[in-house]
Image (cartoon, rainbow, N blue to C red; front, side, top):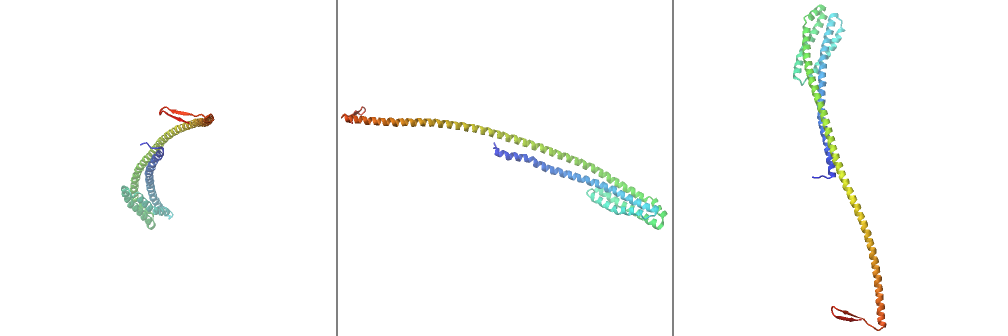
Length: 288
């Protein structure tokens, strides 16, 4: 079915807008994937940060307790108390960030009692230093119970960080794929939109060119017809002038003929003569 130009233009705009709609939808989906991947990467970095801070705070608490045991000065306990106050916050943050990972939750559940035992050992050492002196506290430290707990905690944290590193690589790869897909969708959509717009422009230009050709032909035909009408009008005016002249001449001749007949009748009357007419077809004679 051949569409008219007025019908082709809306279709051309609709086809040109279609890829834009597809691009918008695909872009939203791709951007959602990118944002999700970026959020997962951020969470991975946040988990690694809290793991590092957890070890750092436990180490700070241990350093503060040992400083107090060695020197007996209370100011060393400030770092110990400050570190102990934020360890629970580190564990709560890790609990929240790894809630969707069963393996990491298992490791976190394993490290909580280890850290609790480590802190209890530090508290007992501090208490013994205060009540029994340096030698008794040193005996507790020499048992290496605290060192064993710290080594176990470091091992679990190392496993958790290795898992987060693997997750980070996977999430960065997923983000790269999402980025590549987004660029592909945008590029393909832009190219498709350009081709459709170009095709529509060419089609409309072709139709406009045809319309101009038809309009030019109609204009030439109209001008030719108008010229012919003017020429015919002039010819009719000339014929009308000739006819009016002939009519005038005919009227003049008829008038002259009437005058001649009148003079002829008067002459006959004056000469006392008559006229007759013989109809050969009917063999009939009429006198006047």
